[in-house]
Length: 151
Image 1 (tube, rainbow, N blue to C red):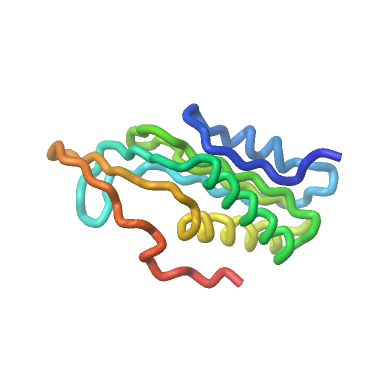
Image 2 (image 1 turned 45 degrees about the vertical axis):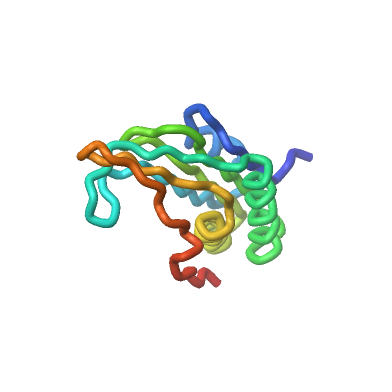
């Protein structure tokens, strides 16, 4: 039997197709895919790029736990995929891909939302923004942001 969870921190291109291929299985009737891209602005400032840093062993452990929780909470047949980029990305670069697949759409939707919200508040990943005027700064942690209820 193939594993139902894939987690990774990568310094190379993240692939939506790899995510979809991993979660695809004969029993899958629904796949929900979340893709995070680097945008050209944040909190009123023009952004040119974002650098991500992570403590990969701990981040992957947190990703694994989040996937296990999603499986327990939403569907024992759930297949989960989480990958986050580490390094510098220009505008439009893919920073995170999350996929959840289930026999039914409701579990896939709920699990995917749960995984991204939990990643944002629990994973040891830091974001350093580069701005148009030439400055750069670390962005305050997402754990400071109010947590979204995805039950």
